[in-house]
Each structure stands twice: as C-alpha cells, then as structure tokens.
Image (cartoon, rainbow, N blue to C red; front, side):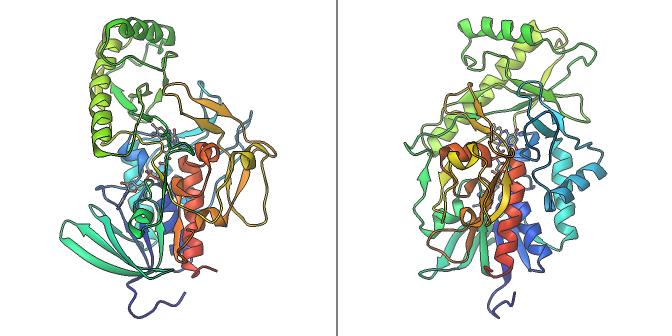
Length: 402
Ligand SMILES: Cc1cc2nc3c(=O)[nH]c(=O)nc-3n(C[C@H](O)[C@H](O)[C@H](O)COP(=O)(O)OP(=O)(O)OC[C@H]3O[C@@H](n4cnc5c(N)ncnc54)[C@H](O)[C@@H]3O)c2cc1C
C-alpha cells in the first residue's frame, strides 16, 4: 500500500492479545509499516493478563485433532516450541475438546520475538486514549504512555482491544453483552503451586471439600464439578478455573467488586485444597493474574454478524477469511457452561464483513470484538480463532481495504 506523507503508519493495531498479534503479523507480512499498542507491559491478552493458559480454536472437535487455524498463528507456536513448550494438541479430559497448553512467561517472550522478527513497532505501557476522524474514516489515535500523550496518524486501524475500546472512542454505538444486555460471567483462573506431583489429582476429593466449604464459606463455588484444571507446562503448577462471578455492567465499580471477590475466593479455595485434598498439603496460591478474565463486554457494529445458525450448520461462504471451529460455549449461568457443537464439516467460515466496522471505511476488528450474535460470540471469542480473524484483518487493512 502507498502511505500518504502525513501518515506515520500503514496499520495501527490497538491491543496485543491473540487478535492484535495476529493482525500485526498479517499486516507486516503484506509489507505494511505496523504499530501495535498495548496497555500492559507485555503481550498475550487474556493468556498473560488473566491466566487463560490454553489456546482453544486451533482444532476441530472430534476423535482426532483436525487443524482449523494456521497462518501466522503457526509462527507463534514455533516460537513457543523454541522455548520448550510442546504445543501439541491436548484433549481436555473435562470437555474432550482439543487445546494447546500454555505457560505465560513463554507466551510473553514468544510474542515479543515473533513481532520483532517481523519489524512491527510495539509500544507497551501505552493506551489508545482518543481518536480523530472524518465522517467515514479514522485519521489518528492519541496514545497515552509513560512519556505523556502523542498523536499518531495511520492509513488503517484494527481494534483488537477485546473491549472495543477503539471503536468506542470513534463514537460507534456498541452493544453491551447479549441481545438482552446480559453479560457472560467473569472468571478468575488461578495457578496453584506446591502440589505433590506424585499424588494424582483427586476430583472427588475436590468436589467433597468444596461442597463442605459451600455450607459456610464466603464465596460459594458455582462449579460443583470441581472446575477445570490442567498442569501448567514446565512448572509443576496446577491451573484451576473454579471461580465465576456474574458481571452486572461494565462500570469500574462492578469490576472492582469482581476483582476483589475473585482474589478473596482464590485464597479461600487454595486453603480448602491445602486442608482437605491429598497432595496439596504444601500448596500455595502462585498467581491470580494481573486482572480478572473478562468473557464479554462491548460488541461494536460490524457489516455482518456471524450467527449461531451459521455455526450450528457449519456454513461455508466464498467470502470466508477465517474458520470458527470451537463449539458454542455459553457462560450465561456462572459455573455452568453449556456446549453446542459446530455443524457441517466441523467448522464455519467467518466472512470478511464480520471484521469490517459498520460506518468507518478504514477500521477493522480482530479477536473477540468481531461481528457476532451472542451464540456465535460464545465460539469465536477463543484465542485460536482470534489469531485467525486478526491475521485476516491485518492483511485486509494492509492492502488498503482490497
Ligand atoms: C475465564 C476465561 C477463560 C477462557 N478460556 C479460554 C481458553 O481456555 N482458551 C481460549 O482460547 N480462550 C479462552 N477464553 C477466551 C479468550 O481468552 C478471549 O476471548 C481472547 O483472549 C480474546 O482475544 P483478543 O485478542 O480479542 O482480546 P484480549 O485477549 O482481551 O486482548 C486484548 C488486549 O488489548 C489490550 N487493550 C485493551 N484496551 C486497550 C487500549 N485502549 N489501548 C491499548 N491496549 C488495550 C488489553 O490489555 C489486552 O492485552 C477465556 C476467557 C476467559 C475470560
């Protein structure tokens, strides 16, 4: 693409999660000059901010792991392998779905390296804080960072903030939550250290201990099946998703309540393990994550909203740019996820119009902010799919919308 003299970058990507990294790499592979802006001091999005330590969506459901996502996401997996992570498909014993287990420090370094090797300019500790626009185009973003504020002009922009923070700043009207305005529950996955690895994890003992805790404990556990747990590769730690909290709205007050509840509950639950579950006598809370895990917030307007029906029928389309293969995983009721499988060949095409903002020519979406109704959202939000929608958004933006 030919950049106008006043433009600092061809493509500016807001957010350094799977969607943003996919977008930056896709755009860079098209030869674009790319800036990626991330508010935390590291990349990875939910994987590194919220202890979401498994990539979902890389494979279809079924007895064998059939790949649904490749492209630039494979470069990320290669970097992870170079750091010692196997990145093999792992079949979750709880859900039977194929996932890739992660270790967060490796994710941070792998993403630094893959973006550096593609010449992407990365600004950490920097937030997209304001925009200028014309009637139908974004012109610039104001970045708030450690050295104050600065204005950066771009040809094209990708909102990969998870929360549609860039779209919100443009004034586009965003939907909060599902069609009724209800948000999926937030969760606080934790890492537990100090477990005796020679003692197998006893799910029945966990269930009994939590049942007992629920009689008098401050933070009754909604996941009465003991939750989802795996081992964090290379660490001996247990990854445990056990705490869910309903989110009323997107106010700072609601988030503060959720963060504080999640922290207090995490300490209680690890105490329960230590006192009542064999092998956990020396267990300790290794980490709660820099922030709570947010499943859903705002949905910005897109030119097409992928539907639950598209997924349940495995709809193929000529304008498909990415594949959605993860089952519809609905968390409307805290602690009781409901899964519905993708139909057809085991995946559905995500059309380009899901990635294009309605009302702005040069704004694309990547990751969980793409156009999707509430059922489709419960599938496309996973990180494997986010890499794929990111790559497509980045390539399209770099080609000047062609
Ligand atoms: C509890 C929980 C469990 C989950 N389990 C799984 C799982 O096992 N596997 C899976 O694949 N998915 C899982 N998901 C879903 C998945 O983690 C997210 O949907 C996914 O991370 C979305 O990727 P993203 O890149 O769109 O957004 P995010 O990962 O949220 O990344 C967005 C990035 O943008 C940054 N950002 C936001 N605003 C700004 C701004 N104004 N300026 C600069 N940067 C900004 C954020 O700091 C963040 O790094 C889970 C989610 C939760 C909450």
